[in-house]
Image (cartoon, rainbow, N blue to C red):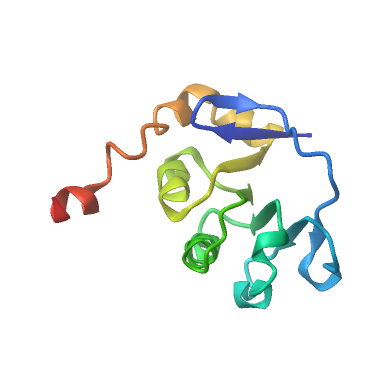
Length: 134
């Protein structure tokens, strides 16, 4: 199982449609990107996708953050989910890059309980770059 993290805390996955790998995407409404996939391959298809899920195989690999920001700059307005080894300390960065939610394992949720994620849920208030531009 997995846990979905949003600004309101832990929840269940409410997305029930198939999520297919990029290589298998035909007319689907949800796609899974590995952190090595090029988001440009979705150009012209973004309006048809209800969800894009981006893999985070390691908390030390930030390529998924770049992919999310690129997708938002390309005009994607649908649901954007980080999946895998994202830790609570990275939640604010994930939200600022464009992710709507994070999918973590039950094991990670047990090691980093909901209160640690909620502590970072006010991600707009602690953005030092915005303060510098201010």
